[in-house]
Length: 415
Image (cartoon, rainbow, N blue to C red; front, side, top):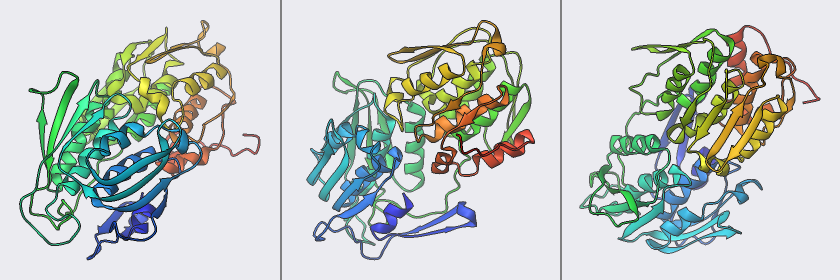
């Protein structure tokens, strides 16, 4: 994301070992639609980056080609492109088959109009459009330091909306930076479940937002691995800086662990999970779908099967997080049944005695690597291929896991 934004001319400074990022808009944007050659932006396999930039750059204006690794060109983005096409002043196209990247944009910004987007594949389509709306509706978003009345952009969701907590978090962030978000639940078309009316404040630097210092919460999705470590090992882990007051829905992962039998304690400083004998659960994880892989590994050590529901969209992530996850869990000795909206994990009848070590594929998916590694807390001989893929979101994951358990992992050429 940082490399892409630098490519189009933003001044981004990174300090404090990556913990502080300073973003400065150029005095004169380099995103003019009149530029001769498109900016070529390599997105690797980051679905978040390509979804958010597709929306934002189409609203800002300019010529771009967003592309990535081969897997990225198999990940559908057609619903987002189709949502933008009616309101873009220009053209937008997904070049690969079935509406997949590369995405080519030739834009002079957004025109007035309502955007409709499906909510069932990824909430990031909606979040990307929401964050782009103040840019697209700003009074002179193509130039700095101007003010005036801003128009409102309505974004309507058709069908089911997945991962709603992330959408609520998006709205709060937009408002922190000067945007205005109004949630609409009545007077909608029959196929629309919810809509958002979004505008810039009209008092920004011409890009639709105002600058400020912003403190980012600790990553609740990453915290899930350490809470899960407590559940699997029978130990106790406290993650500081996160409580149920956090904006992130993935804090709700601790509630699932509580249903499975863990003890959960919370105070103003954080949440502590203490492992107890585990039981299988039947759980809808639509709102916390990024923690499905984490829970699946916990389920290996439970008494009875665990049924995960509501996550059909997980098949369209960095990898197929239902089918590929099932494949790796089976290697460890579990019985796994795939469903249209999730999976059922049944541990061996003789408990941990029936679980066995294995060399596990990660499919270049950071969450596969981090979650599957937890199986090694109780099962000997677990080996994780391509562990460096955790660098995508958590470069220090294995180092932090070492600190937690008090022993090191071992690098192996075999894995």
